[in-house]
Length: 285
Image 1 (cartoon, rainbow, N blue to C red):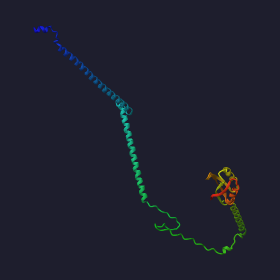
Image 2 (image 1 turned 90 degrees about the horizontal axis):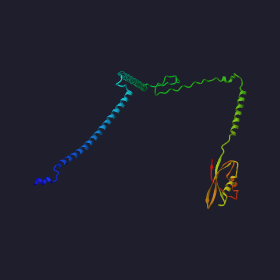
Image 3 (image 1 turned 30 degrees about the vertical axis):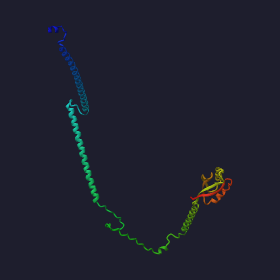
Image 4 (image 1 turned 135 degrees about the vertical axis):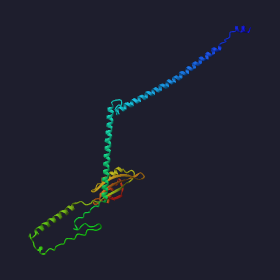
């Protein structure tokens, strides 16, 4: 009775089989993805290794190409390699010979210098004395005796009385005349030389009457004073007070020709502009 009831029911008795199959399917898919990723990583690693190998091969080829420029190719003729090695040995021997020659020359030079230094220290300098004393050279610490003065022979008084060439009065008179003429010329030449001219530098203070005085006209009037042996120099206006300015002017004069009193007298003649004149500085040149 129960079996007949169950037969009428629609029940999926083998569902577990399908569930197992579905789970297995998805597991297979998951494993396939993981394997593909691992394979991709392996392929990438292999490609990296291949690239490194290719780069290493390229570097080896470049190094071999550079070495062939310096040395013969070992894969080529062995005779070229032997010649190259023989040339290197020959150059090496030549360099060794040059070094030995240089060492020998340096050793000879050092020995020669040593001998010269030894001779210079041991050799004594021979001092040669002039043959004034007519004596052998003195020993160190001794001086040469003074040479005796030559003896003067007394002349006979009779020789002065003998006049072999006659009288020289005419020659003496001519020599005296020439000497006096030359002395006269020297005195004239010396008298023509100019002596030292004494000069003085004077700084004058020229004061006006008031602040309305035309200082430009005042300076113009002062510079009109001209004397032999006098030369005007620079000038400037110096404030005195209350708007009044004085004129400071410099001049150089010869002491023998011009006097300060005369110069001040000439300047004060311009009564319309000049009140007074004072000496601010006086220096000898």
